[in-house]
Length: 145
Image (cartoon, rainbow, N blue to C red; front, side):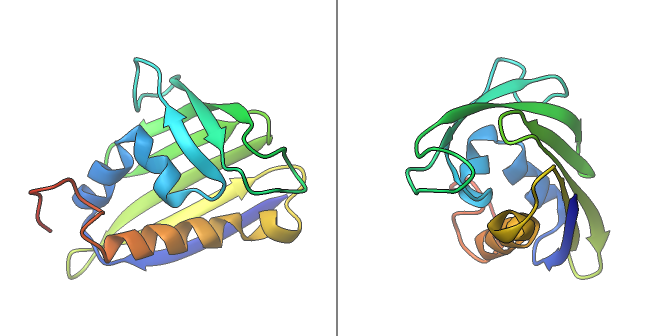
């Protein structure tokens, strides 16, 4: 099954990519993630990250479990793709520049069981990313949009 969502972010692609390129920030915008431990490849295709789940109960996983994230694509300013191995989810986020220093973010999630809360993963993740664009937490200290 496949779920897709798109949203215009109030930040230019350069700023969105700078945020996404920090693997630890995945926990800020991807639902159910409490922490990330990237490997030495960082944000490169083929990188494997250890993902710690949050402690909230779920029908799809035990609280606090860890899984592996495999980075499938990392094209600066354009595309970030990954697979969550235990959840059997394939995720692709694409970025397109828009007028007024904005970015159209489109998120596609594919997996075998996209029902209930999983069906809304793409929408919830983009909402969190959008909300982060509105805060000073989006960029590192000292950076400006």
